[in-house]
Image (tube, rainbow, N blue to C red; front, side):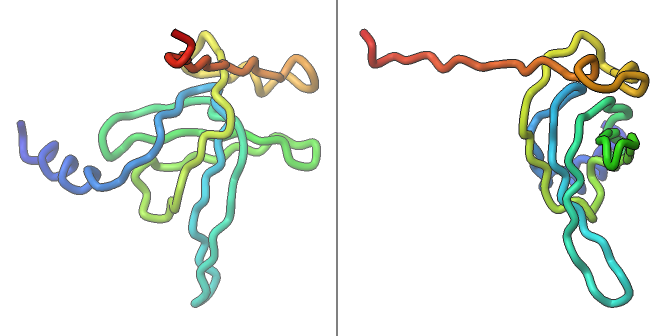
Length: 123
């Protein structure tokens, strides 16, 4: 293992975020500094892509605010990200779903992937 990957693994090893992918609806809580005050703001939307690897990995979240599409790119291992919460897991066939940019209304919906728990007590 080369030195750069060793240092990246050491730095990024203590951050634990849930697994998410394109199509998932997530809430990203990130810190905003205004002057000498710091507050946490939540950006809630759909993940349209994840790219990169290691400490350079980023993900793009899209939401519609006031009838206008807003996208924001977050570095995954940013010290400003407080938490990431997966609200819904989407079922999409692509890793990058840029086609959502052209769609509005019902055609912009993503089907939710449902998970069924196995009940072992019914034996």
